[in-house]
Length: 538
Image 1 (cartoon, one colour):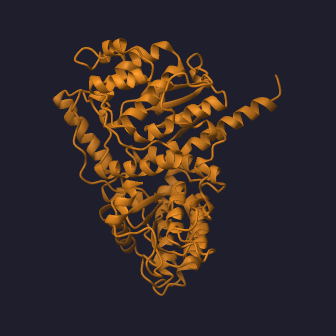
Image 2 (tube, rainbow, N blue to C red):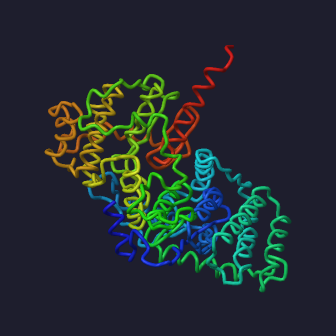
Image 3 (tube, rainbow, N blue to C red):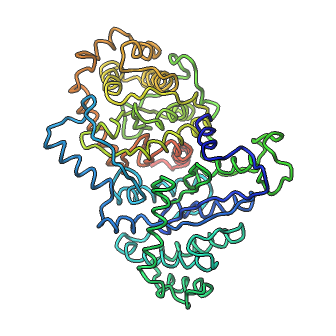
């Protein structure tokens, strides 16, 4: 909350409006982006409920990569970094041996993996988000078709914007925003159906309303479209400093897709913008009574089991271990350095405990410490910390006041995990250690790289300090051979599930990434339990 307040103050924002001005929200849609497709459905409710304007900046990751000869900053930078590491013979998990961050990061990069990985994951993730919120999911055409038709769909989207006669980035009122969303969704559906003639027909019908278009999207030159998209990419990346499509921006803060729309609505409500309440100032109304939607991802059936105790041992009831049948249990891929992992820990174990599902944890090295390092630029790190702060507050996490465990702190944590915690094959001990680490290191700022800090965490988890201290020798870092092979195999298992980041979760054949997907994870478990109840015996 303090971080949000400082950011908003710096941007000249206040909690309530001092005049009758209408907040202007920026929307960055990409016609082939699965998360944009879900957001275009949800935001229609937002503009009906709150007084606001929406300015549109159409973007296209594919076009941005094309401008760089098909390679993203991530791919070019990782290739160069790996070549240098090989030449220098550097083991990237060594303390302090991290390559420098890229100085720029844009929409051509997005998440820290290849474009194909991102898109395949995005389709599945947006489907989970749509399911949780009761919306439709985008069904993409095959890659070869999409790469061709996406350019036509881009042109049709620009026709949607130009029809208002206010340039390529029009500011729209509520009625116009809803109209744009409906038209954009129709274009996306034509793309999904591989309907090239339908795309041109849709563009013609819309474009006929724009003075510059004489009934056909073909009359929008590729050079003109490229110029518009390049300017919008510059606005998103250089001015607003973000790297993903499907984003909303308002006065210093970003809101990614439908899963963060609740924060924007809460902010608009606190500013007195609700259309159905003439006296809705935040000083005299409870935000819990606000007309807010899009909070389904936080509403777990096991919510009463999500607690943050001050002691981390003997939590009850006991968890069921998944170590004897790892292919059919609930698995969390966790990183000691991931802020999102920390705010997922309590809910992960609450889901397993409440629904009596066997579980286990597989810790992974952070991206910057892996043998083939993945770029994590400063702009991305800053957004993640801000987003973790507000998400953590929403789910009841004690607060972010971390001592960054990158390097020695993480290596020591792996040494303790694989020498003291994992050999017990007791998921209750795993929970105690992770919850102690999460609270002490990430909320209280304890330094696990020091003996004093490590002792606080280990004893807080009920572990023998002498055993933990022994595990961290020699040189206080432990023997990496004890855990490197296991961490590598766990990382390969994660990759086979189509995932690369943390926290990630698997349950039988289902896989999902992100603490946003805890509700979807619970829904998957409940569906499996219902199926096993009604399935006929063979």
